[in-house]
Image (cartoon, rainbow, N blue to C red):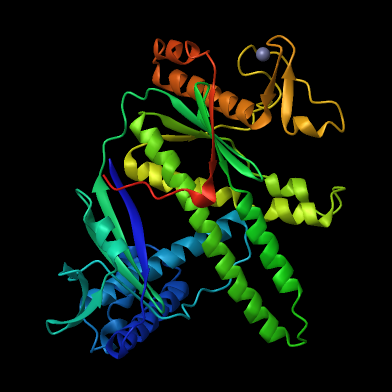
Length: 401
Ligand SMILES: [Zn+2]
């Protein structure tokens, strides 16, 4: 199976690159204009229609023209799709500097050599993280994309999907923690810092007293970016660890379908403003996105259970199936714990959810693959669950192997 991902680093374009980017942007805009006029969005038709017109950019190598047309075709196709789905769509126009190519570039001596035509190249130093990713076994660079402030390399490699899969890691995303594991072992990653960061940013932005909308917008943007970066880092550590462990134990990963979660916390639902803000600032989708792309890259299968399949994951005991009972109101010592009458014990709400998600994910997996006997392995695990608690903000980076 061929898998792709991209690796990105910061970068400031020099003059010759900036000129090339500007030409590329204009070529892209031309191709889009032509495509819109002729209602063409397939690459083949768009090439036929616009290649002749792009001849006037005579200082740009022809392979960039092909890439600009291909880029335009992509944008037009996306527009067509949006219209089909009934979203209001404006005529696209690339307004930011851009350069994309899958031809004639080289990685050499730790640098990306961007072709300028006439066998001239511009050398861009790659940082250690990028080089580290590129040095992984079997990785090939397919294309590069330069924007005004970053450079992104699309890389691909051949990977074997894990087979046979020997278990299922369920993932439950909560406000202050991410729980991952199966009935034998559950890890609770404490991500309460994510909530704190979001809250801090909100209060900082709220404290601006300047009357200038432009300045406060810019400041809010700056703090928003910072927040996103910090939150992303925390989630990165969690997702990396989840995927690494799943790969080591030859397990697949199961998510709940939480589409519609934002609808639960809207104005008029009888919740406080702060609570809604907290719930809605949690990057549920970002964690899933990270786990998904990391897992695909490592050959770890990921499935998403439907809402039908995950109904009541926190309502029934993962061990005996008995309906669980909440603690008595006001009993703060039993925070997020539930009582199972049959097992006669208190169970952590998040741990129960993970065990159930893992089990249901496994059932789906077994049914779709027809691996009947493998099902017993999970059921045999009904001993004590090992619960690990990890502070996600202090997770060390896993050592390289
Ligand atoms: Zn029970």
